[in-house]
Structure formats: structure tokens, C-alpha cells
Image 1 (cartoon, rainbow over the protein chains, first blue to last red):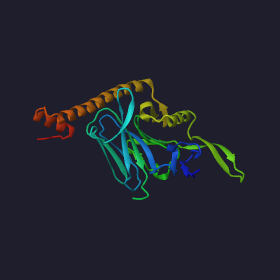
Image 2 (cartoon, chains in turn red, yellow):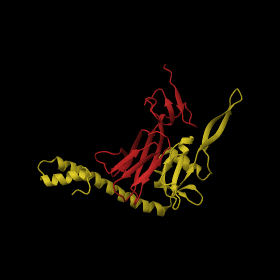
Image 3 (cartoon, each protein chain N blue to C red):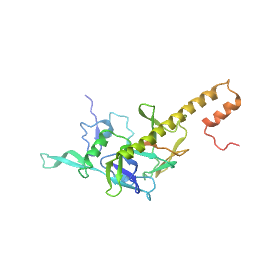
Image 4 (tube, rainbow over the protein chains, first blue to last red):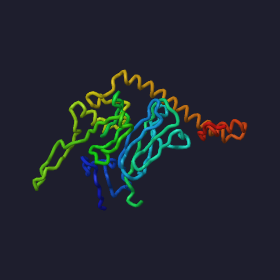
Amino acid sequence: MSIVLKISKPTYDVLTTGNANLAFSSELATHSIYNIVQTSIANSDISTTITHSLDYVPKVWIFIKLNDGTNDYLTRIPSDVLNEYDYYITSTTIVISRYYNGGTDNFYAIIFTRSPNP
Amino acid sequence: MIVYYRKDTGEIVGSVGGRVHQPEEIKMWIGNPQEIDRIIIEWKPKTWKKEKDGRKVATSFEPDCDEETKPIVEKIEKEPIILHEKYRINPKTKKLQEKDREDLERQKKEIEEGKKRQAEMIENKKRSIGVVLDENEPIQKRLENLIKVLNIRDIK
């Protein structure tokens, strides 16, 4: 039997909680998620700014929530098909933008911790 | 969980997940601080057990908020959703609450319009890409579609 080292996020029981609530697991190829931020751009707005104040430029994945007519799904931006959306990252902010206004677009920003081997 | 909302309407503009927030997360913000306020709901120990050495260890946790908000927070954690679709903040009481029927109806219309627009946008892209690649199309048409696909504006 191999030994596994796990650290749970605060308030979660490390023995029973799922991988999503772990800060570290030796079983996973971990590049820890710092946080998941939900945000939207609505109406006449063309951008939204997340201020993270981490003092480094984090690796970030941005997903937009779409619907195929029946189900909601998430897809990464920007892409060849969805090049109306883009984002940029600085050491203090993440700015998600779109090239038009009207309607509401919902986004998930997955912010990763600083890599231990930059 | 940190929830950001418009000071004037209570409309939620975003959120940061998590039960307990580190100082760096507390510094996070979404949108313009002049227009946006936030509420922070963390979790606290609910039950304890005593270890042999006399230390108290928490065995379960609950949201650290009023009784009315508690079930909402627990529900959100079990079924993560885009918060602003179902909830808003009451700007006066600063409490998380479910949207009323009127809000949901108006929002439903907006979502339907948004879905149509997104579907059209994707369909147009696919069509344009297909036409660009179609050598039987006139060169002028292919060029127009290429401009659309590449999102070039103000071409002279």
C-alpha cells in the first residue's frame, strides 16, 4: 500500500472530502488552484475587471458559459470560434473583455497559484 | 464565499468561492469599487470533539451568517451555479436572497436573447469559415468572410 499525503482546504475533512476541496494531494499532478471566480459582463459593458492583488502574474483559465439549446456548457476563451472574447492578466488584475455590448455573458476564471518551478 | 454586487440595485456581478478566505483573497475585488460592494460569508465550527490531550477539535462546520441565509449558502455550495441568475443582494439589509418572480421573468428574456445571439454568432463563424475555405465562392465573397472571421474592423 502506498502512502498518500493530502492537505484539505480549511473546514473540509481531509479523510472524506473530494479532490476539489484539497489544497494538495500527492495523488494528483497538482498545480493548485488559488481560487475560482465567477463574473459576468452585462448590458452596455464591454469588460469586467477582477482585482486579485497577488503581486505576480498568475496562470489563469477563463471559461464562458454557453448553451447548446438544451444544456449549459463551459468553453475556454479566446478560441477560433469565440474570438469576440479575450482577456489579459497583470500582477494585480484580470480583465475579461468582449468586442460588442448587449446581453449578459457569464464567465468562470480559474486562477492558479504561483508555480513552484517558474 | 465573497459576493460582489451593485450598490444601487443589489445585482450580483461576481463571486469568489471558498469557505475560509486568506488575507490575499480578502483583497480581491470585482468591478469598480465606487459602484460595487461585497458581502463575505465564511464558515465556522458547528460541533466539536475533545481529544485525549484535552484539545477541542471541530468535527463539522456551518456558514457564519443569519439563519435565513444559511440554507442558501449550503445550497450554493452543493450546486454551484452562476449566482446572479438565481440570487441578488438586498442592498439595504446586505443579505443574500432568492430573486422574485418578476426578476426571474425579466432575466429569462435576457438569457433567451443572449442564447440566440451566441448561437447566431457561432453559426455565422462556422459558416464564414466554411465559405472562406470553399474555393468555388467568388474571391470577393471569400475576402468579406475572411474579414468577418478575423474580426477586422474599419477596413478601408
